[in-house]
Image 1 (cartoon, rainbow, N blue to C red):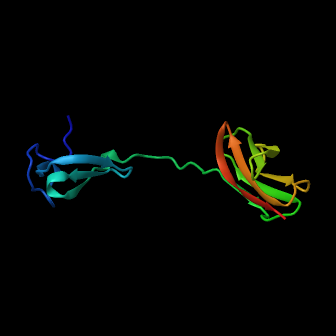
Image 2: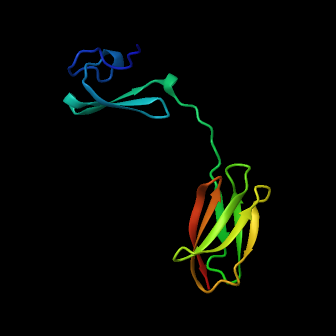
Image 3: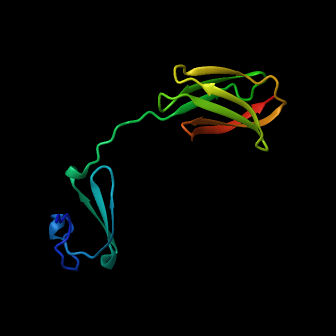
Length: 145
């Protein structure tokens, strides 16, 4: 067993001292990625904060998928710039406002930019969704003038 806060005796003491010397009645506990523990001390109407550096969660920065579609509004073509989260190809699906699929195009993971001809579409609002490995990674609206 590891005790990070409290003596095991209910009461009110320990502010400013070692957390293991505190008297409290915990009701809820939350640990953040920085090694800080937040303890709801129900009888004393307090949130007790305990920092333990050994509990810091190392994390890796993962690039967020990025899809940038321009110009928007547009007349005849869209430029799609993208940064896919994995090395698999993705698909852009464009639907009309009532959900009918009007264009589908594969976005190669080997590229980061595609130009899409939308000249045959009628003026209006369209919805797009970029899907990779069955998961939607970006959604938005396109206005065709």
